[in-house]
Image (cartoon, rainbow, N blue to C red; front, side, top):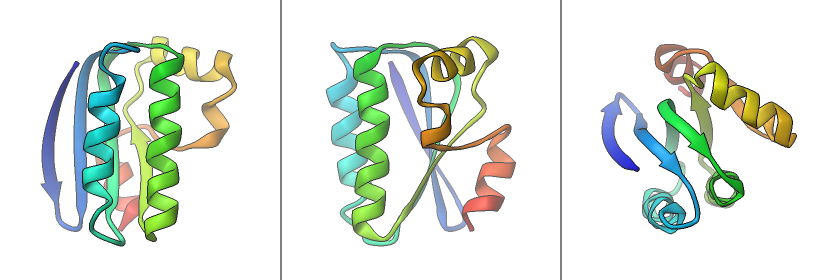
Length: 111
């Protein structure tokens, strides 16, 4: 898993690539915790280049959303490839997140 950070106005975009699984999920959790030290942070996870996610990855997303809520910030996902979107759907997590089709739309909705 690789994480690239891009700032677009008031929104921080974390573009993630690769697989999110038990051996690297803690790295992402730590990164999300760092993001929400600043209250009111607007965070968008761009998952366009994520090709697989395990239950550890789903847990990471839930933790990210929880940190956003407790810090007065916002948390959303964008650009899920069809295979990844299918995994979110099959796991029942699709309705737990604000998911936007593109990065641009995600940024616009968070602002």
